[in-house]
Image (cartoon, rainbow, N blue to C red; front, top):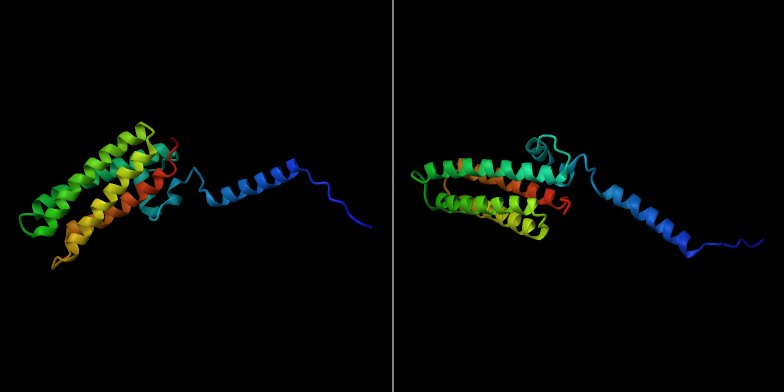
Length: 166
């Protein structure tokens, strides 16, 4: 006895929509845990202090990164008197990163996702440039280590920014 399938376009659409929704749920992180999208989730969780709102978490992460960048900049100023050109490169890049992060904070408030991505990417590049400049130094110092941590924090900020509701 032949079996006839009576499937309408509406049924196919509903099945497709349901499968897409469950696939998206499997891929998208829980909004209560925004750090799941980052490469360094433990560092992220320590930075955002339990924030579950992605906009607020991104704002907090950028502010903490600015604070630590300011601190690294102060250290680089002191080290500049002792070490060579790599530290000067880092000092310049820390200043540039701070400016880019300041713009990124404004981008979050203005719901400007494209500019947010650009400014966070620029800050990430600033930290990477510092690390590269310091690799040639004879000894690994606190400026080099700071640049590495700042890079990871900027990478986390960039990942969090992909969740920001604009």
